[in-house]
Image (cartoon, rainbow, N blue to C red; front, side):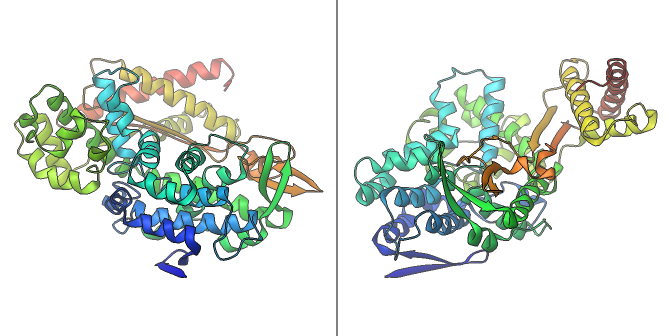
Length: 477
């Protein structure tokens, strides 16, 4: 018996055989259904209106890709008759995002800001309750999801599934299908995210890749690899993923809105912590209050989806705490905090003074990164300019993290050249370039008239000083 779900990216997603049909039945579980109400790209639809696809759809896509990759590892399997590890791999692919809270990673960032402003013990239940990996592991091993998994593979099966997601064994080829630098997760969102956002990307020939996957074996265990005729497709994959960061994932408006959400939630949690949730516009029975007071209860994790925030936004707008109502009103009216791009300002200053004209691109980027980081960190210590609403947003994203393991490794992208298995960084000039995309941005509240001009003046002055010092030191990166 086969069940099928239609998908715009992968066509038909099929569940066949007893084990796969058990996985499909798990889609109806409340913990998995919650993913329908968690958007894959958080607030990105504020910038890209059609980017409203869910973690639910993405998880199905990852399952579909993982199943195709698994058919390479277990070529003899027919009609869903996988090994125990194969079944665990498919379950892990389906459940890899089960622990995400509202707006995906944005909720974790909100809690990081709250902890920064209100230090907590490192092992606090509150911090663990917003870590999607820890929450996911608990759901997989301690909830109704665990019951289905136990029926599939026995009492140790849920832990096996959780271990694959958490990379407990990095030399396991089944783990690599779920979590590695060439996994089903990345292969799905590299196609799904640009499709729904409507942005152009380098493209990914998934069919060609899977047709060319082969299984190798070495001292680091089994792994997938392609021969040299297909490595260009893998190179294209790394570039496509790399370019999606400046285009989509790190868009300045999306990141600014994520910060406003973090600031709002941090202030709400502060009022709850003080026992004054009414100042945040909430009652004592509101799901956010219940979550904050009993963060280790999995039942409360079920409440944390995007609709909870949107359904509470009007309450925040009517809160007694003006610092909450102000941010809530701005989110409602899409009035973003303004931003100064430190990297762009540094680029402009460097171009005008010509001090870096003799450097190649890689060294120039390295110097600018160090300058921007130093300037931004110094600005945060400037009490005369830095306010509570100021935010330094930085994010480094390399094109690839080479392992350089000779003979192959499940956690690297492997290519066969001359009968030898090598890391793709060993043969691809693009990947070997160690290209990295970095953002250094300062967001601030424009309620302070003239703050933007003062910040820009200080940033430019600091950039000139740091560039001059770097020149004196021979631009050592």
